[in-house]
Length: 261
Image (cartoon, rainbow, N blue to C red; front, side):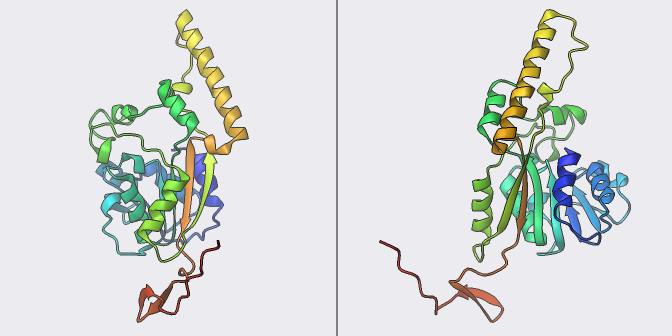
């Protein structure tokens, strides 16, 4: 998790310390981040029971983000950082977050871009996340927390909007996107342990790639590989809808404007 990018995103929302906050696909690192930002009403959830003892009693919940057990609007905000791509259905995870939030969600995931596809093709970024499983001793950390390395699902802005609009067609979701650059592991290795000419050449190549990536993303932010999704619930119904007996229904008085010639 890029804690600086996540912290900057959350701080920009100016949320109250008592905000009811759920962190999904989360670990003790998420707990440390959220409490360091002053949040006191935090629930941390994950499929991995190993994190239960790392979070104070009463703040942990065993949850699959693709099928959360909470009621609708149980939390003010729901947060995830680099967790949805471990799901069998990342879209389902995003929508479950949206279902149980009252105000909005914050999701920080990898962004699909031309630069990122090039990095994958060059072997500078992973298509399947082997490193996560290796770091967990080959027993977990992959798809749905199994030992099978998950595909690294990368999002686009249009995909997020279409997904939310399909789930809740009653009003326009208030969505904003922010961008960050996190160098893939292949570009952050040091050459100090490589004394061979090949190692030095590889280090030079990686250094050039880092510089190019920073330059491109400075000019074109949408080529960055980190995407912060901030999605708030609709503030109003679409004009063709109306409340009737505590239900949202089509408004029979709606006059559909004629399309312009």
